[in-house]
Length: 308
Image (cartoon, rainbow, N blue to C red; front, side, top):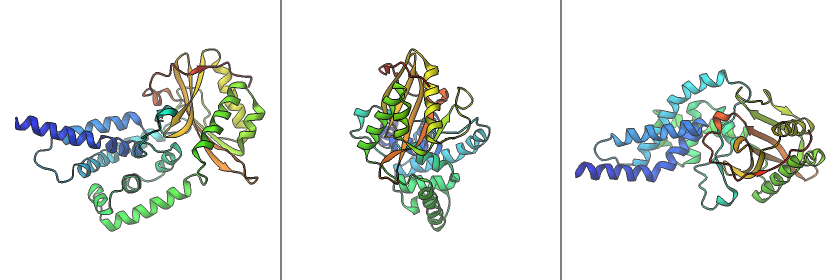
């Protein structure tokens, strides 16, 4: 009876902190599949603990952080041989599911890309402090460094993130409207309208991982990006579909082919000298290995792509 009661208590404590555990793992690794694996590994370690734990949340955060740090060693080797630009695996939800969305579970792809450029230790300190509000004393215990060292690491990480994050935070309604208008222009093959919505110096990244057709380098310039997007859509042909979604909490687009997810794209915006706001960055994930976790996209509306 005692063992059963203790197991039930352990499970209840874990479920209370499951979202935090996943959020730390996902931010550290940029992979939904790897994050879910770490959630399971963390549970196994937690379920094997005997005796009282003063802070279950602290224990779980410390455990998943160290598991993620170990995982990053092998991930770094894989990234070195990755074909083309690497982008994180996207978290996709429906636009009408925004109520109650916890930002601790999601983070923009743009920020995840910046976090990827940090050292593993910098990433751990930044995530624990900035995303989940742990004290430097708690972080020091989690990563096995002194509190003073963690403060220095955190300061360095914040400066790096500030330098790499988008400078303009467009209002949500503007992001949604511009995303919908860009999708409509793409579906209609309206190159001129696409160019009106893109910043002249827009950059596009496409992550195909060498598995599916994708640009191997960043695409620069509005016309180059627009023509590339239209070219990809034109090759999909009949059976293609598209719908607006939330990508890591930001407005984005999900493209399907014959009911299967083909790509997920999200945009960053920048204010132009004339005061208008245009799309400054497009990140598209096409690597099918990074899209297997997405739900059935059968409700996507079909379209006939316009000419490239």
